[in-house]
Image (cartoon, rainbow, N blue to C red; front, side, top):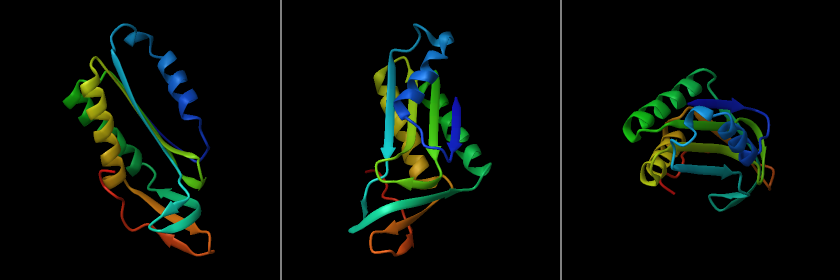
Length: 147
């Protein structure tokens, strides 16, 4: 289980490939890998968005994500999980989050990946400030659960 919070841009597919290459202890054990990649879109709540500033509470955010990964691992018999989340200034089309899980069967993989992502979006201590195309800034007050 690994959680990374970083202000640097990342390539989710390279990160996934690199992480999976370093899991020789799981060779032959996993039959499913479920992956979610979230990217910065250029609209929200009917407005055009040019960039976003994403803040977090250092230490608390990592602990929260580690806790949900561990709970999900216990519930779905995960063999491994990886969560990478950006903070700082994020541009349109930049990857923001990667959630990947490895397990023996696809059903557990899909459900576990979704559960981690839903918790991350609705409960993890992140705050988003959007820069609109019209020059205004606004804090995102709520996340849309379940979409």
